[in-house]
Every structure is written in C-alpha cells, then in structure tokens.
Image 1 (cartoon, rainbow, N blue to C red):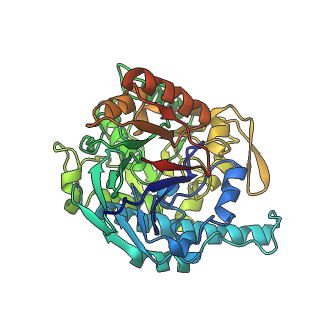
Image 2 (tube, rainbow, N blue to C red; image 1 turned 120 degrees about the horizontal axis):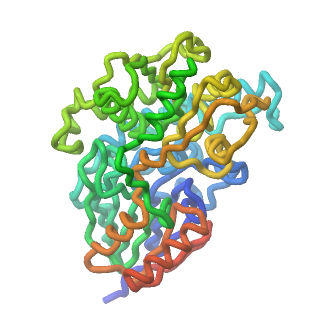
Length: 462
C-alpha cells in the first residue's frame, strides 16, 4: 500500500500584506489555487501584478474563490491571459458579483491606460492595461457554482467544502481534504453579526488553518449611538452648505452604507438629503443583494426588496450625470467607488471637492498602505491625481464602524470554535506587524503555534 502524496502550500499573495490573496495547494501533480487576488496599495505591491506568476498558469487545474472582492478575485483575467484554462469554483452569488467586479476592473484598466497615453504621465510607451475586457470575457465561462456544505470532489482524493463566512454576499471559508491532510482557508471572516447577512458559520476543524488578520490587533468600536460621528459630520457639512463624498467599496459596503443612512434619516439624526450612488458597479451589486434567489443569505428580518428606504435615492449611470456631481448645487451625499480612492469616478469628485472647505469626505473601510484613502486618513494636505496635486481643504473622517472584517475577538472566537482544533495556524491577509501581534494572541488563547508566512514561501502540510 503506497504512501499518500504530501501536500504543499505556497503563499503567492496575502502574506505580509492585506491584499493579493493567492494560496497554491500542490498535491503530487495537482495544483489548486485558493483565491486569485489583485495586489493593491503601494507601488511595489501593484508592480507584482505585472510580474511573472512563478509557475505556468496552465498547470493549475482549479481555482477556489472565497469571495468576490478585488483582492481575492481581481487577478483571474491575468491568470487566464497567462494560460489558465481550468475551473473556477465559487458560490452562485460570488459568481454574479465577480462578473460585475471583473468587467468594471477591465474597463478601468483600459481607460487608465488611455488617459496615461494621452496625458503622458506613464513611463511606459505605450501604457498598457493589466488586462482587457476580452480577457474578462474569456474568464467568465470558467466559473462553476458550488453550494454551501456540499462536497466538491476535485479528483485525486481532494475534496473541498464551502461554509458561509458572513463577510459579503456569497463569501465562504473553505475546508479542503487531501489524501494526506486537511486545511481550512478562512477567507475574510465576518463579525459575529452583519447588518445585512446571516451570521457566519464555523467550518469543521483541520490540521492546518490559514486565518486572515486584517484587524487582528484591535477591537472594533462599540459606541452607544451607532455612527454618531458620521451623522454629526453630515449635519455640520449641511450647515456650511457643503456636500459629503463617501468613497465606498461597490460590493457590500454600499449596501450597508445605504441601510445606515436610511436608519439615520428615519431616526431624524440627519436631514433628508439627496443620496446619489454614482457607481454602475455598486448599482449592479445592489441588484444582486436584492435578488430573491439569495434571500436565504440575508438576515431573516430583512426583505431583500425593501431593506433600504431612502426616498431621495438617485442612481447615477451616465458620465454626464457623474460630471455634474463634481460641483453639487445643493447639499447632498455622494457615494462613489472605489473604497480606497484608487480609481473610478470618485477620483473626479475628489479632484473638485477636496479643495473646498465646505465639503467633507468620509472613509468607510480599510485603507491600504499607499492608497489615496490612507493618505487622507493620515492627514495629507495634498493628494496626487491624474498626474497633478490637489489641495486637501475638505473635512475628512474615517468611520471604522462599517468594517465587516472580524476584529481580534471575532477572529479568536472563530478559531477557538474549530473542532478538532488546529495543530498549526498561519496568520495571513494582514501587515507583518498586525499578523505577528495576532499570532501572539492565538498562541496565548488557543495554545498552538501561529506563524506569519512570507511572500513566496512554501511549506509542507502534514
């Protein structure tokens, strides 16, 4: 009787950084990639999107996606361009959302390359997109839907199961069994409760666990009055005749933001204002959240069609309508992607609104190192956009209450509930400092080694 092939794990992204999640599981001749995320943030990270992948993409048989955020799915078209032609497994809502996210990403890549060519602010001649709309259209037919809890037989004795992660619609933690071992990939773990989704589930335990550590060194705020600094800023901004600009992630964050604004208006905490959603991607994602087909993923007390009640909600789709919002005539709230101000229509709004002290900007999510959003949070007095610097005179606020990443307690509770407990834990999807700090908490509470992998490292799973 032969010995089972050992399993090896390579950290090709999401190690030492909160972006670019890619974990390569190798069992004999089989290569399975868990997530295929885009590096975002600092230039040195973004440049890795252009580098050789390290192994031939065509040698990968399957990609298992935890969810449809760009840092977990955004590299897929580049992988396909490099020769990947296998299967991409994800939950049904994740497939719907990934289609929206990837098409938007390709459009922005192509447009940014065109702008750089016209205005001459790229060192490349000519500037090229990381991938194109054609690459995305070649990617979409590779998707295959998988249900929660169902055994996904990948062949060669490798079986995967998906469990709700409570992060965004369709998000999952993935338990993978191989002939020699088993491993859990946490994906992005939601908090104990989510404003829109049902609570997360804890998958069966495994010998090895990869757990995200985005907020592994801190606890989220738990104020007596939810989002009161945000509400107070809206009131102040309206009094001085300004408008509020909210760079927001198109998937999940926009839905939660609209629900929160609905509740604030219903409670009389903010005035009745026009609320503009200026993101075709966010509007498409909102339609997925409202789809009755995914009713079982929402909280039981929510009606998919009516959990947002904003009479003055306006959907902005055309470029002409978007341009008019650069100079709001009356106080309003403008929501536009992207959430870290790395691209999209929000850049044009920032360019025109930041120099005006009457306006305000609210950041409602994690702001990666090297992003414009992080610069604003850190107190930048000027911001570079489209090759020029723009003065920052508008009021800036970060509202951390919107985060749907688990904090230290959320993550430790999730890990402690795994049964059987792990023998080894790898803290991933976090900065090195945060991952190390979280690892120390894991060892103290759970009593197992918690290691911080380095980018490109390969380990044997026993």
